[in-house]
Image (cartoon, rainbow over all chains, first blue to last red; front, side, top):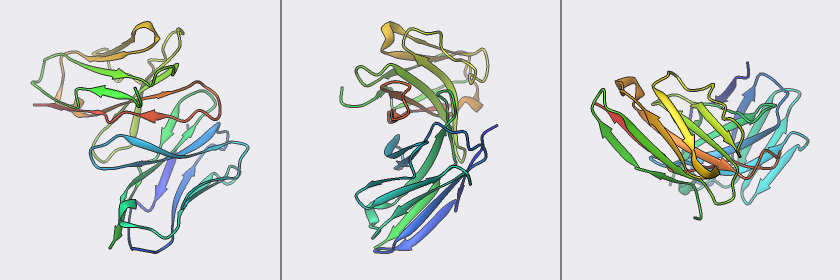
Length: 111
Length: 115
């Protein structure tokens, strides 16, 4: 059974710092992996999707990498800003269509 | 619409009452998911619809939960005889298909409180 873990559960950094969020999964047979952010009281906003054959994806200050063999993905945020404060979740899609979610990393960027 | 729309945004109900939650996916999206997010927990898969195929109901926690999707578009999640443990945020998501490069798009959710 696929399990997704995100470490740390919470992170607080000063503005301007580069940071890395981690996501690990137990079964490497994934279809794709998606990173989301969730603001309080809101739904999830898709940030990046990495297909199983890809190693990384970039969007602006965000870069997500995928290492299927080791069951890990990282989300790198460059030059963090207070507006980046949110909960970040990763989800892996198994061989069917189900997405299995981690419990998220709650990020706070201090001004 | 521009995004996935869910209604109501908040629902407070008394234990034992039935509730209906609505999801309007992005136009043209054939795949529709319902998830439940409880406080401090990850997202829990409930049900999946793909086009006109039979839905995958394997995540529904009990027979008090049911969902339908009419005309391949709008979906309704119904919870009968609500219990306090049903209190959670119910999230709907859609995607354009089952392709590897089809991201999930979520609505803002319905926060259900059972008193």
